[in-house]
Length: 317
Image 1: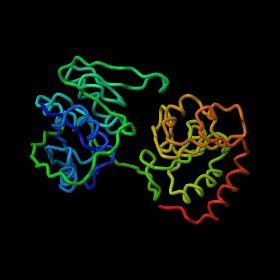
Image 2: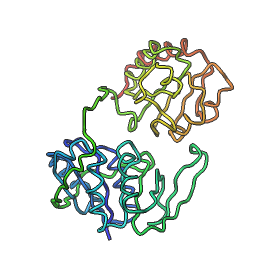
Image 3: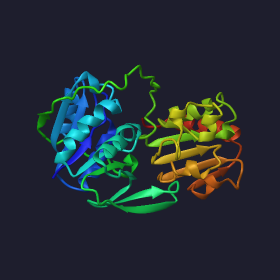
């Protein structure tokens, strides 16, 4: 039996994390179907169909699916589940919203936030804020699995020609209503997928001082992150939070500025390829995971850093 991947999109374009989920599904079986539930989402279906790993695209059109309310999407996924051995989605806000409902209605135990597929019924996931790894064996006939997107490369996006099959939409249960969506608009890369991330912590002392972080981020074409301490202090909004209760990032370069390195923050960034830490406390835990550490006052170090970047004038976007 094939595998069902539930695609995340905005009705116009497929979200990158869905490509990670498709690649993860390919580690289980090569027969992959992708559900695109939305409103006027033909372009998304074409995009998914071009992914070589996808064998079939399921398109379900309804205004009820436009804003992917979990209460509306879940019954559709449950109805389709009979034809599949695995149901897979990303372990981000999208997947965490509806997948537990699917698992509950199918009376199975969800396998959450996996970072490795060992076999079709055996998976590895982090526990204890990433300080240990659990090997999970699922004996359920239907397996509901969410994958940590940053642990799997995105699937290739061209060369495929999967057919599109129409799926009838279900009536909305009318137990929830979409009101509005407030989104942060930024020209910078998305935090979860950026190649470079620079984050500030409590050491920034104020939201006003984050302009130092922003200036460097603009030069590096980097996303801006923050520790929970900085978010809780009101220096920056919580959609920038990196850590166990924020976003997990695995960039090529992670620069931690004024961040002590609490275990909860390390859980969200310690798999980064290169970690640079700037902190005036030489005993800060962040230095234990850093590839490069600078023990210095950030208010002196960041202006000097920016000055050197201005001299280079070779930053690639």
